[in-house]
Length: 342
Image 1 (cartoon, rainbow, N blue to C red):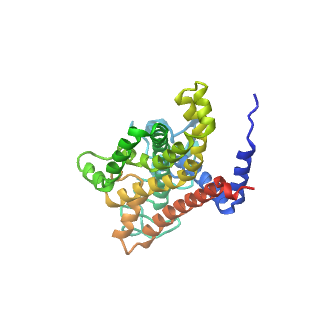
Image 2 (tube, rainbow, N blue to C red; image 1 turned 30 degrees about the horizontal axis):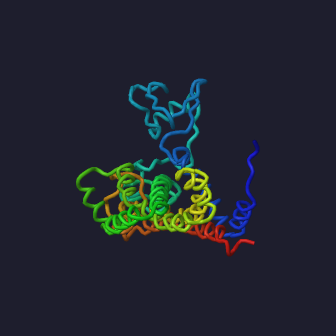
Image 3 (cartoon, rainbow, N blue to C red; image 1 turned 60 degrees about the vertical axis):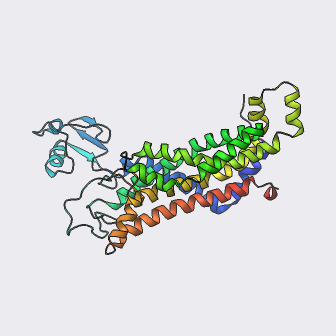
């Protein structure tokens, strides 16, 4: 069975492409995100590939002992060691990534104490621990976008389901749920996160779970309004009279209309997720110390005014990411706006 796109979907896609800024932003964001998923192939202190004595090795995936390459120690080979490099190059060759540093690699051959300004070896300079800023930006961009995407997708599913049930059934269920939302949304989220950070050691999944407790509310009002309006339409009443179940009516007859406003709001939820993670890292209550984080990079820039390249790197990466997402959201909003469709 061939997959067919409806005329309405084609018009919306054409309207999205007509927005030049949003279309270019979409491609830039996709390219940067796909590249960041392979961050280990772009910035690493290990070779991507090693050919030694007629055999292929992939240090980027597997730990090999130094004895594999003719060394004396059974521990994991340190490929930045000149002696290990000489052993490999004597009977083979190595393929290095463009940036020869991981996000946690300490550069021990700096010409001066860190932080050091941009140079040929460190294109964006080093931070106050001697770590390469470009590598930390690549890894930090990846973890920020993955956190934002996971938060957006899961919270959207919960918010759509909650808003659909609340709007479709109405009555006492709607009244009680609205009062609960008023109380729950009034809680100081940032303060709660700071307090909980002193109780448990925060990590990626812990922060994601805590943020999910509050982020799902952003879509409830939109979906609830669509279901309140749609439940009394003629075709919904007809479907109910024909014996359709409530779940089928909600999923087939009302949800597609509610998803229009939901989809246009998703890029802005993603922006909020990235901003929240960055804020927590900036305050020191986010990811564990040493993790690649744009917020931690901004905090270093604040603490090292004599090294402006640190703060500028974090600012441009974060600001550029948020700008691309906002432009994409504006294009999606225009594409789904019926007043702009021709």
